[in-house]
Length: 222
Ligand code: HEM
Image (spheres, helix red, strand yellow):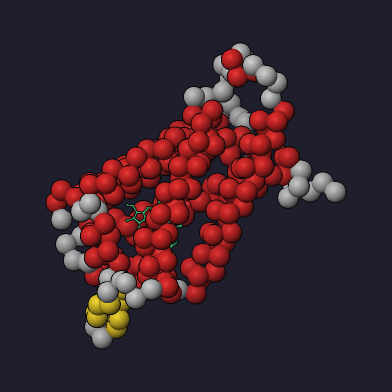
């Protein structure tokens, strides 16, 4: 039986749709995280609380984690198939069509996966399953002081460097992934394709520069 979950093109389509969904998540996550740059920690803590407790966002979170896992799962299957079907010596010839970043998708994916695992342990699991994050009180309501945790982490040089390097590798992944996703969806057009490529570059720049500013600002100015 060949359908969207099992056929090769089906897996590519799923990868593309999940990838676009994850880019949208990154833009929202960045928007919330930029609040950490404000003088008071309250705005970030209240926004993070809303993101963690709102019922619509909780449902979205299930899709988000499912999306990450499926994107990784399909990516691995497609990559292994690619390796197995590649004739010996192929990579030395005729790859002029392949963009520089497309050759490193699996490598940048592994780096993002390692980053995400550490990131989840440091922030998400800590706030959800331990008492390690302090509680603050605003207008009689309790909130996790996640802002304090982020500020504490980004005072450590190793953390700042590790995060920024991860964002750079993530930008390589996004640069190719974004336009490749739309190609997989069948959008290959004289006018639209260059526009999609430009939007991909702009989104990647916003995400990479936006996320990079946060550890740098906290380390030097907070
Ligand atoms: C400066 C950069 C970043 C900061 C300060 C940051 C901060 C946080 C914090 C505090 C949480 C916990 C929220 C909670 O438990 O309520 C979180 C969760 C999460 N982060 Fe990040 N993050 C950053 C970058 C990233 C990047 C680049 C990715 C993806 C590649 C990412 C993916 C996630 C995911 C999947 C979650 C769990 C879902 C959620 O709570 O929304 N984060 N992040």
